Length: 252
Image (cartoon, rainbow, N blue to C red; front, side, top):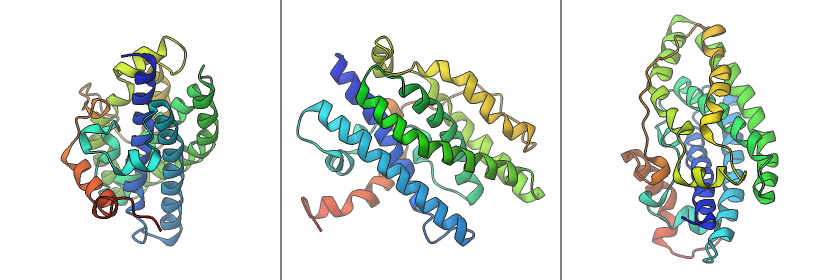
């Protein structure tokens, strides 16, 4: 794998993850538990889709085959996607969605912070823009997780169940794929293994402030970075891509 191929695949990892996460969050539009949360989730989804356009737009430039962000989003099959598996997990209840968002936001904030120092100026520029949005996302999701975990007995139990279910999907965030191994040597991207300790420090709030029991299992679901996904991604893409597939090249 040469540097351009590695860079293209790494950009897909970032762009595909924000795309699928953004789509999942957007599914709450009109279904939030209160109006304020409904609007907040819709705005977070918009931020994630905006980040997707930047990452996949750059991926298209690097690939050099004439595919723009829209083509990469709507005209690829599931096995060509490189998103983290946690992004395609179903929303579940509100607490489950917020827990998923927090675990992802903590990783995303650290990743973008490191990418701002990338030797590739294009990546650094996008990371600086996206980092401001994700810093807010992390503050919000962390506070909500703590409030729900430290709330009623039922809300606490639901947050614990969400943490137990989602925890095995976080290991993939810190497991380097081939693109990351290649690019980390040149300073273009961080080695994800170096982010884990700081991420654990951030997520420790769930225990110290929310009273949740942190899972101690070391098992990690892997495969998203190499194109091996759960059945859930197929349903997401069927809903997201159907118009472009039914009417190729359609424009408003």
